[in-house]
Image (tube, rainbow, N blue to C red; front, side, top):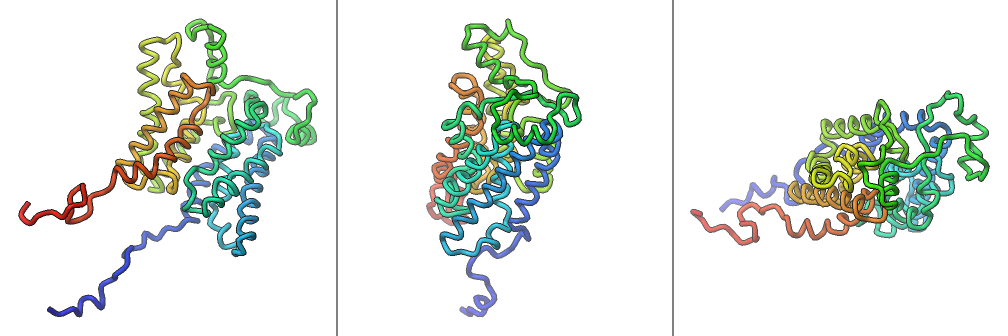
Length: 356
């Protein structure tokens, strides 16, 4: 039999290039995050802007340091944008007026410990931004749980530039802002005091979903719009976001229907905390999520259910970061359990018999 066709047949896959790249994907994700981030800057002013720059700078510096230690050229690797996106996502998960040192420590931890120690991009087991957030929350619980109500720039009580620098540096002086509990934290505190949820008045949402919380909670609508843009651009698929939202909303609806005095309604879970940010921008990380569609749906569902369980029964009012990290640890097992069928073989990997 002639074997001339072998000369023109590609041996190693992949055979077709999609025309995308790591840097292109990172740029699209950052563009999708930009409207919500800019809106958050307007709501919280200069301290939030300084915190964002500090966190992103630390993430990039940490990656550059590791590359230098490995005697690798830093510029080509940093140009892919993954370090910047890691710092960006971490900044959105922090309190808007957190001290600058908190962002610096978190950014360094994210890229050095949670990313480069595992081998760099494509090798890390856990989402670097969420690993850094959990490390900061456990190590520095006080600055990580100090919230304030949104305060648009130009308001009569908004701090000036000099005062903002003092706040960002961690000044102990009295703050010229309105302190507030996050919506989930307020409900958790009242329940711990023995007051059921039907007897308290939960903080109202702002006209655009604005309420006290992390920088990434400033505008749920803009985050959702950015997530939908990623879906339309086919940067992500619908499996993880939809499954994660369903995993959190469905048990919340059941729990609220059975006992509204102990369980928040599903709309509160949807519009509070980092559920939208996590569903569209964090859990969908290519590296730390399963590769198959069914595996991604299982992964997202697990993230959503764990988020609701931690929020409802755990010691922390927010559970997205913990849920994502726990499911990251299960990603290799999910990929092993949910494998696509190889052409010419059954689901167990056995060759198919002719005629069957």
